[in-house]
Image (cartoon, rainbow, N blue to C red):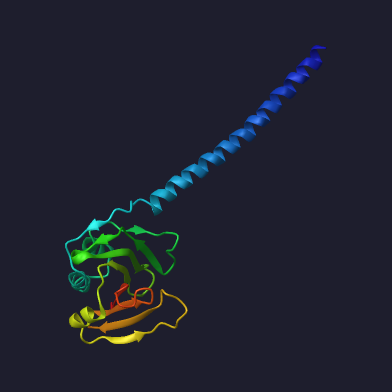
Length: 196
């Protein structure tokens, strides 16, 4: 009888150990998932969406970008913020960065920042795309500052995001002004692409 009881106790202990082992594994997996989520949040969403105030007009902003290198510290200084790498978009060729919205002088805003910088192993130039909103900046206003624009893109009628693109080519590189179909009379975005 004592032997049977010992056997039952041993089986019970083994069952508890097995249960504890499975429970421990589940807890460990849950903990790993929580850590991964926390790390992901700090990588992708370390910025709140508050608007940064800059006392710059769109024209001063363009001038400042053209006067600097297309490098992360320089662009961050101009935009008054630390940009966050979008590691889910970055690849072997480019690192992608985004930032907070920016309020510019005269009621214009930067709604979205998209900075693309080449990886050290990739021989390419960077690119900065700024979605412009707020107070309307017209084609006439752009033409006053940049009188040598050429049309380099036209909408094909498949999306309101498509744009008429006007390009200014300088020794620095290209600046493209996009007037999207959803708001065709107002500047929708700027693209800066330096020569080097």
